[in-house]
Length: 234
Ligand code: HEC
Picture 1 (cartoon, rainbow, N blue to C red):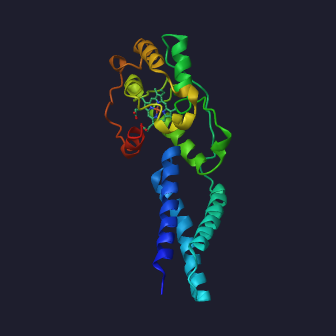
Picture 2 (tube, rainbow, N blue to C red; picture 1 turned 180 degrees about the horizontal axis):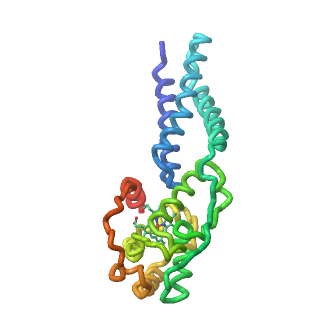
Picture 3 (tube, rainbow, N blue to C red; picture 1 turned 135 degrees about the horizontal axis):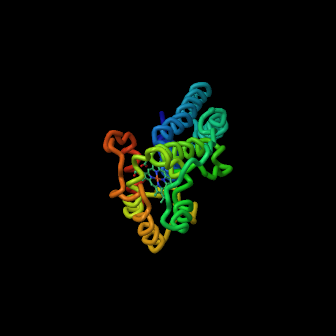
């Protein structure tokens, strides 16, 4: 007979691991689907190991045995994912043109808060080489550059005219970027945002009025799900 106490212990371990995995993903801005796959890659082999051991020994294994299998699986997964060849191309293509900043300080503030993802001057930290951080970070940069790249202002930047809007509504930089004191420089004060917005209003291409692109609305927002995640955690 299974002892119910042990089963609930194992459920607790499984739920704890799933919650830790999903929580970690939200904190670093990792795609939740990837987080679910990683959690499954830990829980399923651990569950199988537990079941096989129980069958072989004919004895019920303890919760701590299950915890041990999970930790072992987590180590294997953590090492294994380093072999996945994704998220390692840390590019910084040539800077071709920037907006004509109304003031050098506007540029400075933009560099501090935005260039980490929206420029060709991205500082790739050491941990951007460690999966799954590497996957999350390279995604942020490639999606950020795709939305607007302030280093390639000689090309059409369809969403550049939303620069002021995202600053005012606080959706940029994304919450995960400055959470837990990460990137303190990017966490602009209200006064800095106000000053920056005033300068940006005088910077061609960044204010709505100056928007010249004629294909507005043509590019569908594919990442609206992800945006909601960012938005609801401040
Ligand atoms: C950690 C990376 C990161 C930083 C830092 C960052 N962004 Fe973004 N930004 C993104 C990503 C990813 C997207 C596209 C998906 C999305 O909207 O979340 C985006 C989208 C945008 C867009 C397109 C409109 C929109 O809301 O999707 C604008 C405009 C923008 N960012 C401006 C800024 C400005 C201005 C700053 C600095 C105050 C900034 N971003 C800082 C990652 C970043």
